[in-house]
Length: 97
Image 1 (cartoon, helix red, strand yellow):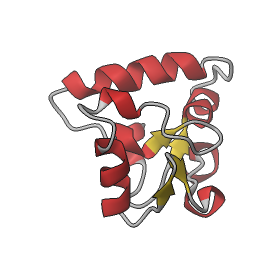
Image 2: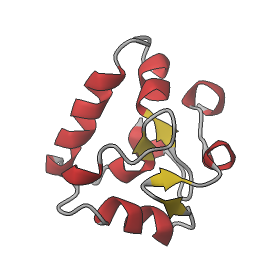
Image 3: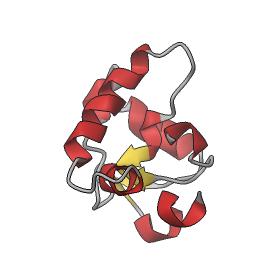
């Protein structure tokens, strides 16, 4: 499902959990994103942030700036590890899939 998040958009761990029918499992989604770096096919895990737009998974990208850089490369502004205009960039899989 994360591979379907469009370029330049972000979603949250909780939104993914809700889409999967397990609304209380946002933490499990986070663990899955941490392990997604070992997949053969690329998973854009940098597009998944917490419900407030914070880059809580940034330490799982090799260094603490990689996640921010990947998002900024897609036109998403990040300041103090938080997405600027979070609602504008938010992609809700319940509505868009």
